[in-house]
Length: 195
Image 1 (cartoon, rainbow, N blue to C red):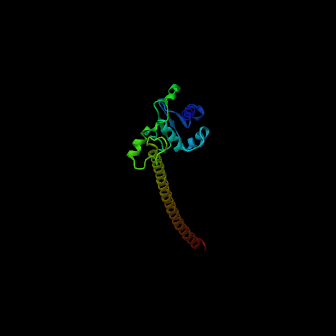
Image 2: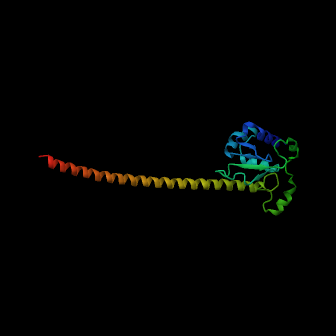
Image 3: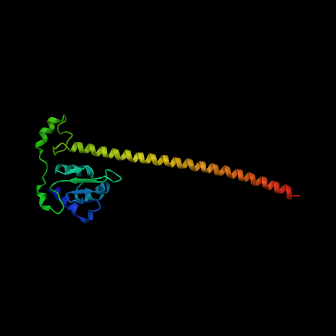
């Protein structure tokens, strides 16, 4: 399939390795920065730059997201790792085994769920609707985390600002006291040596 060949080319192109590359075991690939990948890589190979659509295509052809790919990264939704048993580094002979998922589970999905296929995309495997929700949840969690960081930073800045104002006020008070002392000394000296 064209999608699989494009993906193979994309992952193996050394020019893309800073954003998409084989995982060290060669059994999966890793998108290292989702935002830059969407901006720089996707438009070179596809008519869109939509990460959710890219992931939907991966799901249609049997890829699964490896859940712990982003452990240790600052932004949990930036790194995405995907695995397919027939997509391995140095094994182009396996690519023919990658086919689009058959819609034979569609009947099972429609009997299990109340909405049938309305919320699902064409692959019929029932994962895409859920994946889109998890994608949104990831986005929400990232936004919440960013908002908390901004709130904490704002609190720190306010605290620093209050400390600076307090320090300024104390310095001003000390300055006034010193000025009064200097004035008193000058008056005293003037009264003693003025005559």
